Picture 1 (cartoon, rainbow, N blue to C red):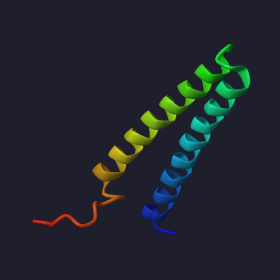
Picture 2 (cartoon, rainbow, N blue to C red):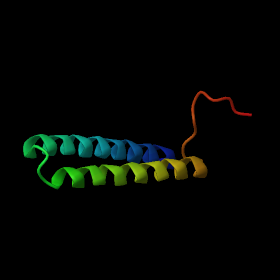
Picture 3 (tube, helix red, strand yellow):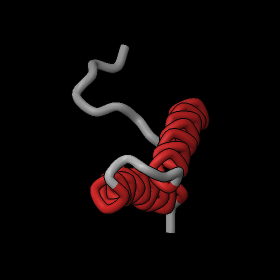
Picture 4 (cartoon, rainbow, N blue to C red):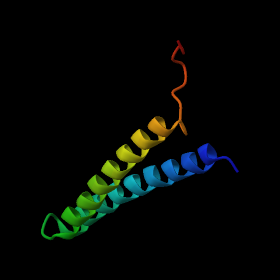
Length: 74
């Protein structure tokens, strides 16, 4: 299996984790009515996952595992 296919799978999983963490924070905020630290922890996890995803995408473009589509190649 090519590395680009595996890399795309990892990116999709990371995106799902970011979205899951965001909805977990929303549920925690709703249940605790703003009185607690679980919401902050979920949002901190979301930020960490988003940063990790950003650097993962940057590394993927740098290594050539991902390439932008629709842009002219010169």
